[in-house]
Length: 114
Image (cartoon, rainbow, N blue to C red; front, side):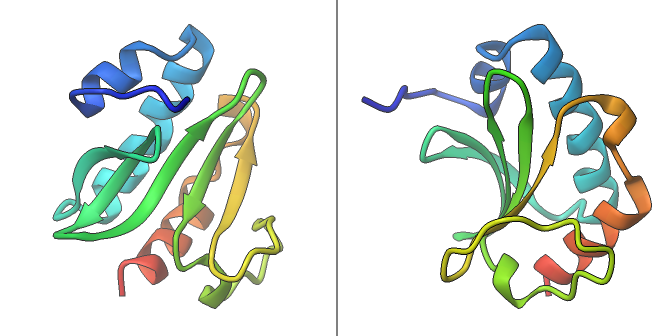
């Protein structure tokens, strides 16, 4: 059963300390790149949406987070950062703040919001 959250803040607070640090680092890149997006929780994940259109998400696992894109299969990925083989979704696994690539992630976010 998927956990339900009343707000993005509640979702974030329910994550491990390590994942909260990653959420903050990635969230900062998302908010700087796409300040018009709003935070929400959808399908048990932290999401950033443009109105009703969900664009970017963060999924938390025990040992990493995924910076994900709902339209990821259509993104240009010259650095080969994206994983996944579903029809639409692609993601980047991030295990530590040392793996955060602000410029590369911002380029993916910019494409995802167009």
